[in-house]
Amino acid sequence: MRHENFGAARGGPPPRGRYAASRLEVRGPLRRIDRGYIACPGGTETFGPGLEQPFPALLERSTGRACVNLGTLNAGIGALLGDAALLAMCQGAERVVLQVTGAQGLANRFYSVHPRRNDRFLRASAKLRALYPEIDFTDFCFVRHMLESLHSHEEARFALVRDELRVAWSMRMRSLIAQLGVPVTLVVLPVRLGHGRLGDDPLFVTTDMIEALRPVVRHIVMAPRDGRPEAARHRAVARDLARLFLGEDD
Image (cartoon, rainbow, N blue to C red; front, side, top):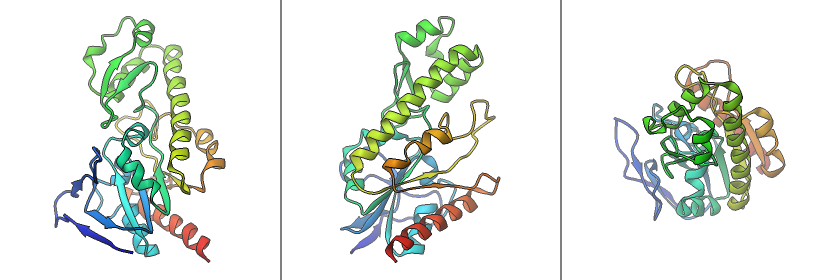
């Protein structure tokens, strides 16, 4: 197996790059890999912008297996489903460690998002404009800002939007896992962004929704929710993943 680094940078922010025909920028340094690797797709938390070693790097050190960080800033399920090149990399892996990202960044019957920057709001559907006739949706550039505004108006109406997002998330996750075609382990890295009025991340994704996927995945690993620093959460996740994977090899 060959898994060299290239394009590495010393100091400063983590390097970014694109594999093959992919349009998504993932965390570098990029890897030259032939076979026998673990693919780690995900969003901002997997990328680990403030970390020297996010969990894929720690997992590689613990297991001795190449762990390719395919984390993309502000990406969710939709970005990965829409990128054939990264999907192919995941399909060619021995296994996939997939970060559970929030439901807010999915295109749905109420609004559409940028296909790669899933945090970017593009437009409201006629259905959403009819539900909130008092709101000017041209005021919004980001999904979270838009949802916070909807949430501040009336809980009953907002519940319709939230339920739509949860249905979309469950359907897309099952579709993604089926397309991957290799053993999948889910990783949940909960954080709270901003003031947290909308809830914790992954946004709108409940424990029951995650547990409903257990029949179609190999493992589910949850980062600690005890307020420890981000680096410590990544260490805990890498430790749990290594224990599971090395245990399967015994």
